Image (cartoon, rainbow, N blue to C red; front, side, top):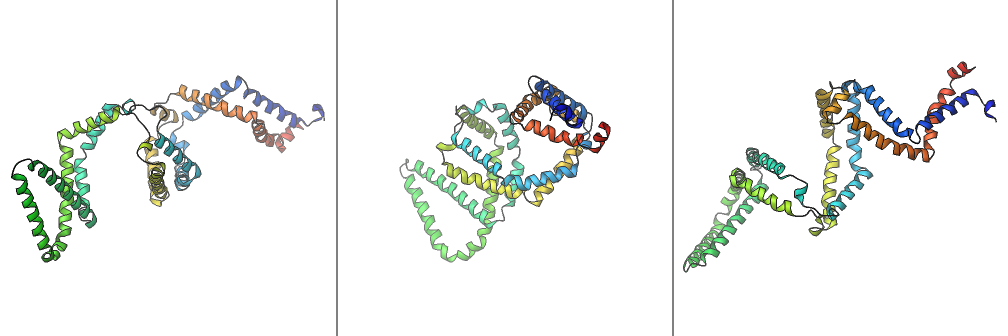
Length: 340
């Protein structure tokens, strides 16, 4: 059918689609993307965040994301990618010190060492656990055993002193062995108390070590050694299968935790706290508070959007989408009445 015989509404639709396609093609595309970014920033920039965002909608979206996303195929794929990178390491190894500044590490060490009172309180909470007490007792026993072995190695070099120490150690062992049967019940009653003591003593040793002035320098020296070493993958220390088992376990724990009602409640609290803190900001002020420059945002849109639009245009989807959006208007009774 010749164009002159077609309904006027269809001709107007074709003209408008062609007009928009022209603006979204060639050199005009970059300019159009910049203009749209500016217009959007101008439109929303003067409105407060609390007016632009519905807190309840955000909470629902966050809750759905927390419940479904961690177990999605995409997240599992990302975990696999991270495992590959961690296992293989960077393509060109480089020293850790090139990535992390030593002054930042010193600040972190100072902050951690200041937590010694909190560490002591935390350790004390585990004092009443029989299993924790047993582990602490065994740990302290190993330390004592290592000390005795070290001392024996030294005393063996002194004539007569090594024999005396061996005699004392063996005698003590025989006494304990003989008393074992008689005091078995008593030991059973007191093992919990001795375990609690071991936990508290172990905690005290940790705290005193943290408060020792030389600990800071020792940690920083350890960092200096590590910082000079090139960053490589964990492949030289462990297999990918072993690494994957740990990653999968952590992933499952995170997925279960994020899908729980408690995580949803916490997310809701964070949304409310964010809006309480930043809800009174305009969108422009919030962008500025994030140290983002308007020109940078516009440039980023101009760099990202054209690539997407060009791809849609090449596949024919751009024209299809434009026509699908505009066609209902031109086929509406209102437009038909105007054109009649």
